[in-house]
Image 1 (spheres, rainbow, N blue to C red):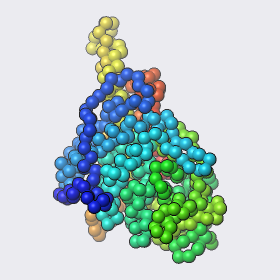
Image 2: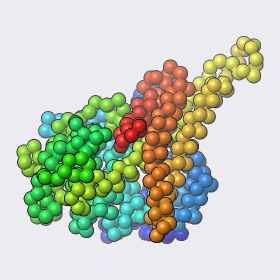
Image 3: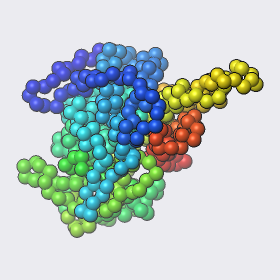
Image 4: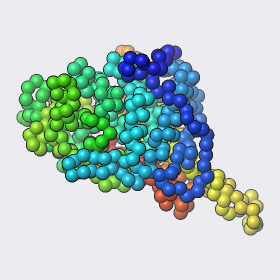
Length: 485
């Protein structure tokens, strides 16, 4: 078992494993009546997380403690702390974020929905963003299978919030593997500490799935420094008010390099460059030109970003020229697993909501009475078709959970293996990744829709919350590579 380090650091440095110090305040078992509530008043009590099922998958199915070096008591501390965090900081802001969304101002700045800043501040303070990263960069080196379990709780409580933190984690992971030592210390450490946020910038108006058609260009300045000129669209978290700096990971073509994906390079393009004191104070000619009005995930800002419109945008080459698409796949593959988990986590939450409603909604008589019409009305969970729908949603969410946690565990095992065994595990994880993405997102969306059916007409109304899950889940079939591709 890996020992838990000190839970506080009186020197003021980032506290490794700080998340386990977050104590439960309030009664997580509290449940409220399923009355009509204003969207801002819905709480985690209305959509209970499937904690028992998560533990079953980790301990009974995958036997995670044997493979990770963390015993059940240690994992339970993280799960309990995660449940407390999402219950207090994420579930209460989910509906309000959907209702209000994000606002772009004339100067290109973006204001996020109420409560998001507070939630990210607590995320940073607790150390959640540092879980899987190397210790030398301020991380905790915790196993991905545990990170995946925490992700289910975060996404299931507020999918839009996770778009900020999950993408930042993927950018930091890529930089920790691919960047120079100086780049790691300058940029990755700030993403790991959650002081700054990260984005991945591939898509252009004329280069969607055909990313090789990208026309964003990079003009050499000196060494790793390049001028960046171009426009990217559908950029998640491209600009917002929760952090002082956003680190964009941008695909661009160095002038003179060949067309197609093999000619693309990859760059760090910060919103603000560093001054002589190492502070992010210099405007880098990065501008949010617009935000999208979307079907769902309204709390997650989706932007159009312009780079170098005034000739003043600098980027820093990662790795070698023309290695861009290969390096970007580090982020894309991680995000494809996360997107599959979006479907799974929303399905699990939808099941919890539908189960609660089915137990409380009184309608009709029991089939056990035959054709007799009685005055003894029953909860709709007594009706066979409702039970069928609930069983379907539960089975789908559990199957996807097992798939996703298994894939995360394979990645943990790959990282610990050597030689031919490492190659075998890498190939297996690579095979599983698109299955996680496509199956998790498709089945997750179907499950949310089925859960909404349990509510009948009320499910189509905002007051009950399940229709938001359907809208939020739909995008997972599209972004990070459409499922057909």
